[in-house]
Image (cartoon, rainbow, N blue to C red; front, top):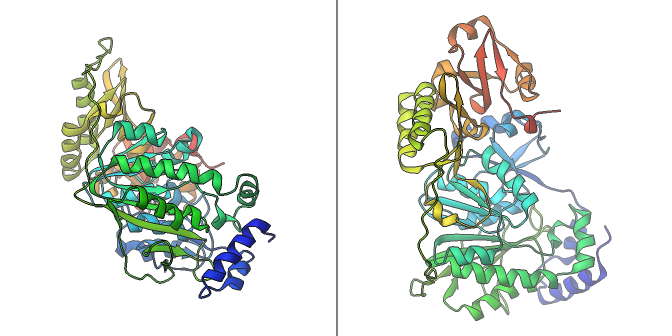
Length: 484
């Protein structure tokens, strides 16, 4: 492919300073084969089940060396694959799996993914947290935040809040708050040249300099939001030092309370040093099976000072007294639903979440792991888990579960009489994903609970709701997600 002349000149200068790198192989890589990958969802799939999942996908697979649940695939799975609709895996370029692996979120921590859409790194962080702690996934673009929402819900992540804000606005609200912050920074996208022709045109029009100002502002905001002893992982998908090592060199000069965290050698990952600093990581397309990527791990020293939220007058949250039902009524409806559809052990887990996280917003129920007042005045796209909504009927108040709730459930949590298991290659599953009514076999009619919500699964992985009755399952799969 034809590369921008200014890009080639700059890279030629870089390779003169780094003769150990294969410059000819670098330029050849832009005409080479693309590499595709998937990352399996550990919230739904046990490591012992990885091989079973991979055997169902087309083509061959092999491990991505820098990601514990990442795999190269010779054929990219289709968005029509039932496993995709069940959130069993995420389709992700292999190099992009590195930053969240380096971040290494720990259950119970408060994590910020500052530039989160479309959700590849946020879903990995959510899996690492395993339902404990808090993930705030922020995306400044309202349009891109919708893709982020879908992927968070597909993965069944219930402790995530999605915000649609500028980093400086978040820094005002969350001083010295987060244990770890991931910054997959907006960049000139040189690593995407061979995958996206628009990336070349954008580079020729704007160049790296337009991104550097944003990168500095984002890093400065992240510094304000990180607790002493906390971690920042900064990454880009570009090659230029001004957006990578040079940017971190600027950051360390302005914020000397940080150190670069060294990492052990990983196959396919190059560690750089030289005139900037040692410890940054690069994935070169001529040396690895992946697009160009840069990553560095920073740690704020324990002795660093804390930022404090400016004192504001306490405001009592207004209570809507016009509601037709109380918070207690809504909570009771949710308890009743869970108790009727979950096993005793499953209900015990959700009962604890209701008691500690319950939030009623209009007729919609959320389970939020932190105080809602933290988000006053912010643009919020998703507020923790969304089990569903309460509806008033002639028979009283009932609870209607959301599609997101179905994707959060595992088949082990649900009573056997409330589960319909379909095979991945079954025609009825395809019809379900198209929104059609599903006819039941005689044995299924006998075993399924009548006139009840039924969790539809593909090979045991939850994919959505249906409602039993009259020898069939009424389809409740969301219209916006249905196969065409």
